[in-house]
Image (cartoon, rainbow, N blue to C red; front, top):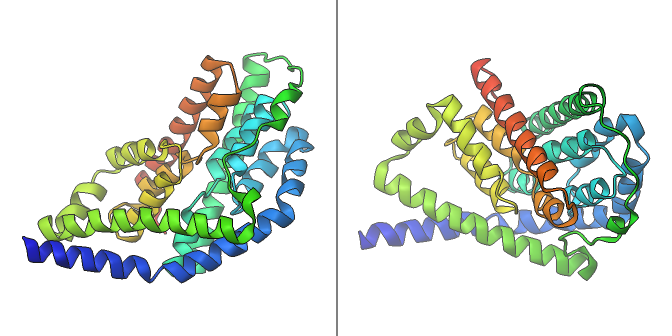
Length: 288
């Protein structure tokens, strides 16, 4: 048992340390893009009007600091619609992209995942806006400018290098812990048995992945992406979790939007759309 534990610790450390340079340079580029274009992207979504879900789903997929949190503030200020907010949540990649790049995933795989999230986010956003406007006869609400000054949960204000180091260390720790758990389970149970348990039940897999996706921080996307890359999650289950995973956006929404019932409705829609999309992909046999 002690020897097995030593082997698991060594494998987890060696595998995780190899990712450090890729994580650092990926986050460095992301932080640079955030500083250069972050405000312009937020301005674009503010002016998007009825085409909000188009801009929301596309801009949400860009790897930048706290865009889902910024969208929550814009929604609380009634600058964007509920459909636009959900399109951002559904397309947000959070920590998925840095991990895929650091694990040297193919460009084709990355584009297929991002493209699927964008399309689902866009379609769901328009559907939600149509329902809210036509069926529920939702009236236009007044702007609530005080919410536009809320600060989202981000470290970008500390400078590019410091923020890069913070993100790199944080995600490295998550990856190390997840790798340790997975390596321990593989050593104790066997990879084939674990894969059959976790990926052999399409509906249950998507439901569980969706619950993980609701974790309101970067841990959710790290867990789901790592499980998928290790072969423990099917494509449908992975997509369900990543669609639901809106990062810190939900936390910010709960803090700045004082309509509790509306917040619950948004979270329920996010979870339902993500899980249903994942299940449909499983049933249709779609895989990446």
